[in-house]
Length: 272
Image 1 (cartoon, helix red, strand yellow):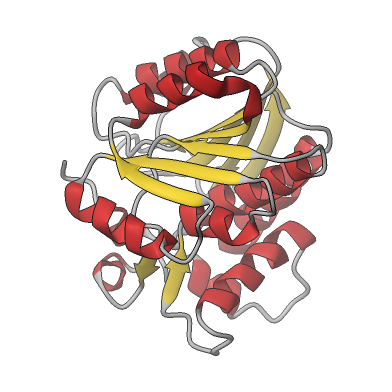
Image 2 (cartoon, rainbow, N blue to C red):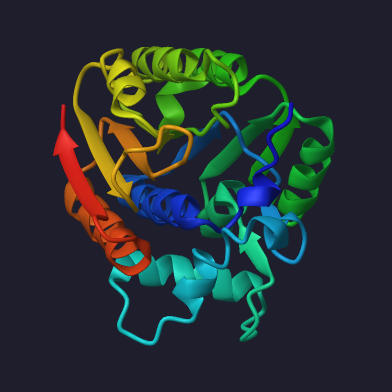
């Protein structure tokens, strides 16, 4: 595997993804205990003085968020609070939390998190990041396969499924969509959130055509989709969204596009 999320950690797409993941988790927690399953967990915690320095993506993302002087919308402020907390309240933003750590920190009694990761060195980092949280576990495995197996074994308890592949494999769009639909079948009450890059509309539309049911699409475009070689934006696609998800997604995508985007940036939130 060539993809290293440490290179991209804290970029604008992470802000979209993690702000909405936090909101979705808290929305589902209002209904009772939550079991969270994560197909592509990653390391859990990222040191922004490492690979991220070379990409400078964190500088254009989380660093600008944490340096913001204005009032932040609640969904964005909640993520900023978490980033501040994993940095010990320091004014310096050295560490950025991935989905596993964000979720682990927010688990309540009766909740659980289970994340899968294919890259062995990253699995070790994931286990270290979650060591202080007994209700959160990270393990090696193909998340597409392992999450579905876990759901079929006890899908009634699942309330949130995250699908966040690196999209470095040609079949990631197909497998992500197929896994989402299979997850809903195995656990009909679960919310399934899929993160995707936005490079060209043809690829994205092909992915969406594989989905069915109640689907919310939240896009944050930093620039017009004119160069398919660049990640011009990102989307969170939510199957079985809880009530209020549309407003939360609009708030998140609107802030990211408005605060971090170039000329022509925009946010679009819509339903299939």
